[in-house]
Amino acid sequence: MSGLVVLKQMIIIFILILTGFILYKKKMISDSASKDLSVLVVNVCSPGLVIVSMFNDLSQIPRENVIFVGILAVIFYLFLIFFGYFLVWVLKVPNHLKNAYVLMTVFGNTGFIGIPVALAIIGPESMVYVIVFNFLFNFTIFTFGIMLLKNGAEEKKRSWKDCLSPGLIACIAAFFIYWFQLELPEEIETLAGYYGNACTLLSMIVIGISLAGMKLKEMIKNKRLLIFTAIRFIAFPMILALILKPVLTDFLIRATVVLMAALPVGNFPAMLCEQYGKDSKPIAEGIVVTTVLSVFTITLTFMLV
Image 1 (spheres, rainbow, N blue to C red):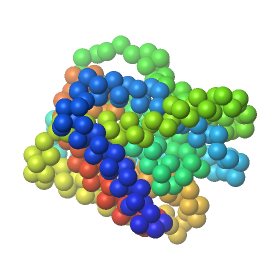
Image 2 (image 1 turned 180 degrees about the vertical axis):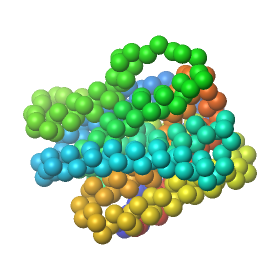
Image 3 (image 1 turned 45 degrees about the horizontal axis):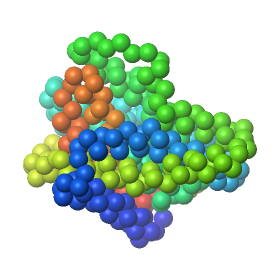
Image 4 (image 1 turned 90 degrees about the horizontal axis):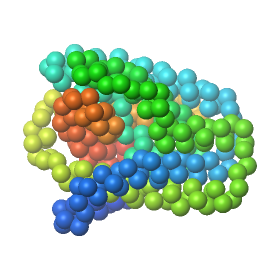
């Protein structure tokens, strides 16, 4: 894929993030408004974008490919779990930071950044595959992720209903629409479109606001975090792209897998840390550094796809 095409799309994404950054710095938007926007994106806009993407002509995507991507996604997350522990050992991460580094390794920003960026640089045809990865993301974070955070944390009662977020429900619904080739009323497409069209703008603004509240200069001095970022978010996705290019001929699948590997640290682990009484600062710092660099790292990686 042309690096220039990806760079142009990532620059647009960066400008949207910068918009949120400036709005916060100019005190045109508050912390409480940011939290409200975050809730809106997670529960309304992102699910809408997932659903409306299913109204594109996806008949050319064989079901066998979707099953294959599901298998790849399982292998992908299992590998990242082992890779996370490997990086903790190599970087000699202190005990109190080990879980944070494992979570940063495994869980990329598949929602806020993954869906809009996949739509922008790969196209709507990729959304079926992105949805498969999103489903596995949710399954992994609500099993392995919570298992890590519960270790030594005050026990909190959870039910299966906690896993049924609007995003996950939208992924399941979208999968059924694709798999059974369901024809929904035009009004539903229009409604989902109104929700989904706001997703990219609002999600990037929320990220910009969160970046504005962090001290980037202090994070740049964190050598361990920078080395971790270089290995996990630069070297790993680029090596993966080089390995997959000769063996995985389907561009849509290859590009989706590589994008999932190149996405910056997700904000979901940080939110779960707060819920389970763990220190979320290490993950928050990882989110800032990897998100800022993602404009360049994703562009460089996709030059190899």
